[in-house]
Amino acid sequence: MANEASYKIGSLSDKGWISDPKSMLGYIFGCYMTTDAAQTLLYDGRLTSLAETYHRFINDPDGMANQIVSDLTKLGGYYFPQVDVRARSKQISGTHYSIIMEMTVMTSDNERIQLAKLMEMDNADLRKIVDVNNYGDLESSYI
Image 1 (cartoon, rainbow, N blue to C red):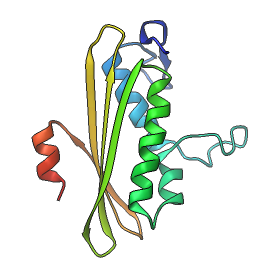
Image 2: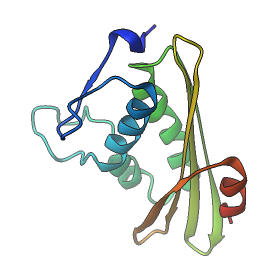
Image 3: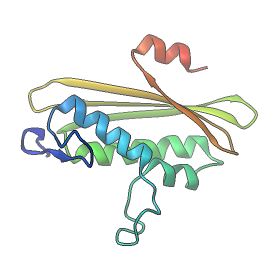
Image 4: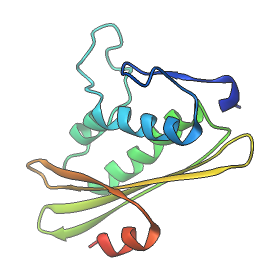
């Protein structure tokens, strides 16, 4: 199992090496959302990204939610000993859907860290991704 005390994430920003577990979780989630699967030939087909998952499951929101769980569980497992990811889709109207993404990790010091995001999409495009600050906001936002 991974032990975050022995891992750091080298960011390509002014943050440098990230070792704080909460910041690591946010960075992992951020990289998942912004990585473009076509950005490299060297790792062709081996990048885990929301863009690739969205492309593969654009007409299957439930399948997309399941793949997001798999993707984020894999990515979080590289840095945290326990990872719990949940994602579920809900039809808002027609082809307009929302997908709630929740990721909870436990550090080796038994610190629980949670991050949640709400994504709105339809068959034509990804509309937005919103941070959710607490569970009440999450449930009330999840139309």
